[in-house]
Length: 221
Image (tube, rainbow, N blue to C red; front, side, top):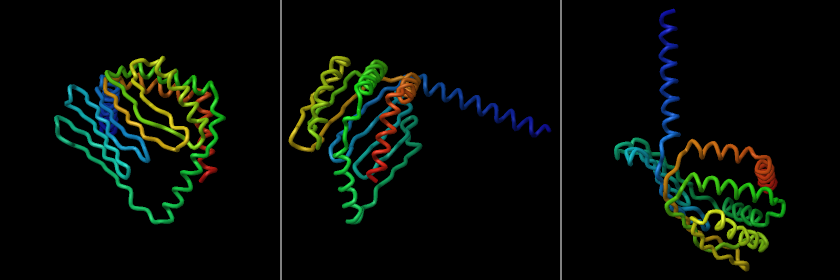
């Protein structure tokens, strides 16, 4: 009986410590530095620091590998990476076919309510992130020129809603191309961002688009 009570007390103490640490992690402010290059793949890194750099998280993404590191007092206490094995010719051909089919997706089902809700979410998150510097530059073009035109119309709206974001994106209507650089640094509170993101994902208009996109991907596969 005594052992059972002692076990429950230890379990309760561990639960309290876990909840306290979780609340602390969500409440404390973090500084971040994000640099990414998007073209045929995604390359870049994210650095998040807390307690004046005593705790630091780094994530590096390359086309075929990624690494996640956790530093405490400048010492790396956790490091995890993965690499993608080279694919055989058949797999490469299937990937190319899959990509070409994805480019031919019809975006007409994306409704104005969805775009409006996404812009509202970006505005809210932009206010919470409070970046000191946020730059998006490069060129973009899609298989369907109407999609390129739609994005070209949305970009000025984003600049009006979030004037702190420096957007220098040039559309290419006669070529399927993506070459975009993203750089962002500032401070963030995870608690509010997590809450806003959950509310955003649970929105009816967003769920409808996500589920429909998932169904299209399954049909392509």
